[in-house]
Length: 170
Image 1 (tube, helix red, strand yellow):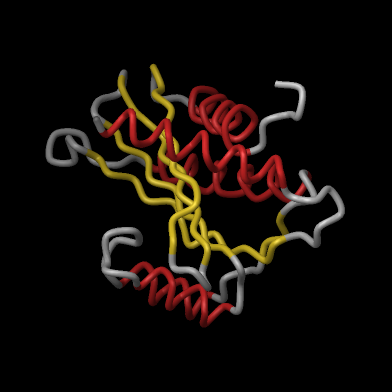
Image 2 (image 1 turned 180 degrees about the vertical axis):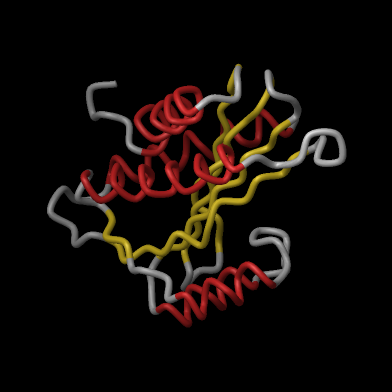
């Protein structure tokens, strides 16, 4: 049932995004961070390579959305990022993400959660929300096979290009 709900939400959001005027001003957006949920932290602690991959997909996410002309990213000051990192998990904090968005004076907020089930099975989850309406406007996930720089980047690119920013022809 959750998969069906996510598909319906994703389809509705794609229709909304595609119906937006082509000459609309880019939406001011803040990426609140990338969080790794390592389901086997006790057996295999999060590696430096995984921490670097989180930074790399954050940069790629911003790059891809900025290149679309639909979004412009507002940098999150270090002091605000420290508050975000020290607080409850974004998306599971009872609305704290909207408070961060208002503090940053942005239209949309985004966050990414990577779940590492094992070195073979991971998934990337991307969330976006409208700050003024306090509503999540995009949720989608892609599964990865293999815990490498290439698999993380391919997964993120696939999600963005096929679900968040699909081409008008596709």
